[in-house]
Image (cartoon, rainbow, N blue to C red):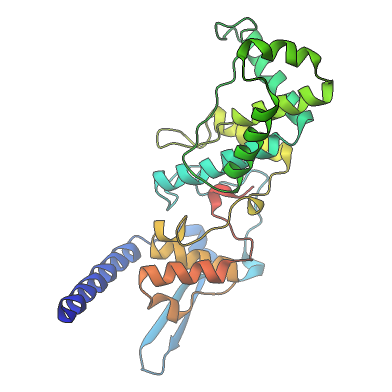
Length: 282
């Protein structure tokens, strides 16, 4: 039985090594990077040569333009479509939870939605030609938990009888109505980037503008872990994240770890650094 376990582990290690080899063959530097990047060559105690490529000195890093092209603004990002959807579900929940705490911005968002409907001639078959379509998110997280807590709070205050909601609303002060409006607006936020969505589609662009207006900092809402991020990306992506978060070239010891060990190490090493996947950066 022990021999079977050892054979299985050896087989897994061989498969992981092959995956790593294939991932490495996909790495290619752009001409712009090659013009400013260099490499460090070291010789280990075992006599093996170790080469770390693509290193750029801080003074040579080009300044970002006003509208930098992110990893998801076109071309291959390195993240799978399912992971991007998962991350942007976390972002949707965070925007919604933050919006529900800012009635002033929520009021502007609702007025914007109404104005867009009125002046662009589309709406729904209700008395006011407006409806609140709740966005159902599959991913859990800090934002989703905050929204569920708010939902339970409002559920306990609003009449269970649908016919009683209108007179209840008429009896409330403006501050209560604005807070309820903010919560309802928050439940409709959809910043999820599905596989068929372009990163620059109108809905995603507006969601990013809304996040900016709220001053949303995703480090308050999302912490990358082995489970929710690192186990779902390639070794190359993990090593890149470690190097970026730690501000140093990848260690040779990192490259020798199995994928699961590397993901766990990344969770531990990156904790507290404020590092985020590009998809969640402001």
